[in-house]
Image 1 (tube, rainbow over the protein chains, first blue to last red):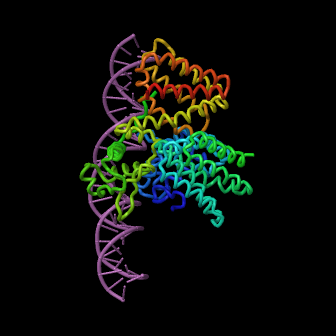
Image 2: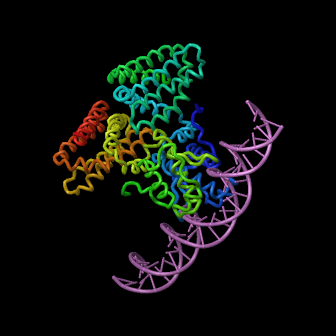
Length: 232
Length: 232
DNA sequence: TGACCGAAAATAACTCCGATTATATGAGAA
DNA sequence: TTCTCATATAATCGGAGTTATTTTCGGTCA
């Protein structure tokens, strides 16, 4: 299983990350036209193709917009594809991380119960088995803290898989990236782990019994209490 | 105001669309390695740079994965960035459009009430005014059917703007693309328009009075009844 | 004299091209 | 079995020509 998602492979991706981070940090401001192609080539020391691919990446993520004669401009934050895990990792360096985490919880509180409900409704037996397997790995005493975190993340992802909704999957990739950051913080509040485990079990059993409402409610409880542990 | 979002500008984007559609249509199957660079160059009649930028676009949308010596492979559908409006438009040509529309309604039913609640909680006066303006344009008798649809879409988008949640915005761009397809169908069920208008008004007033629960409930009602009009 | 319209120039992104470099895989030998 | 090397393929490079859009300048009409 790969660590998280290293999409920083390749020179263009790294260049795109450098520029993207400078944008999220406010170093490059919205509306500003960044240097001309020729100037950036000299500054970065890469070839035109590499730079162009980097800019293409930023463009598909909604960060920039290139027009002839005008140059390449930084687009407003509302156009950014915040759900892209890579974009999220760029924003992870920004200073308003608490606000970002709170906004993420708002959307998780809305999405994860839905995923649990759909997983109960139309998840296959194989899907349910995968969820259970992740839970067992998580509950296993012997597993170390890192493996438990990995299993926790996998538990949530398997629920999204079981929901069989194509619009849910891209959201899950964000949640994966976010969980890998927030779970350790949650774990640190020791004693919370036992409670968290019981809440995970409640979700699992509701899904296996195809009790949609119970699954929805259990997921709501879990996210809400996780939210409280992180913000109070 | 721009028509919807013409991201088909540029030759690489068109090539990417051609290949992307072939993937969503199942012409190119998952796991399959598509032809070598050199062969595709000849088949498409474009330059290497153009093809590479097209493949880069597909890569950022999670459609393909390129590795030296192995070739470029089609990734599984669960990696696709379905929330990308462009990807949605590609899938619009696929055959299982009804299932896709149903999945979209599932997520809208979960997301839009949240957006309405947040808009009521922390939307500024300017945000609320923008929502009201969209509603008035929509209610105006004189406006033609096309303008009314445009206003309807704008109404929903303004709510997402007012919600001030960065993770909600990328979702809204999908809903915009989807609404432009589904609304005409809904409108066709004539008589529904009057009811729909009243439901929009209920959302607007709840938001303006900062009544979070009422806004949440009203949005739920609207989406649910829209769903029923489309699927029964 | 002032405002408006049209054509040309300037600028920057866009497209194309062929060569070179890096890397991963698989075959063959130790 | 393990290590090494050949090979196929994507990744990177740099340059030249093309296209599109804005700006500016010149002319015309009121």
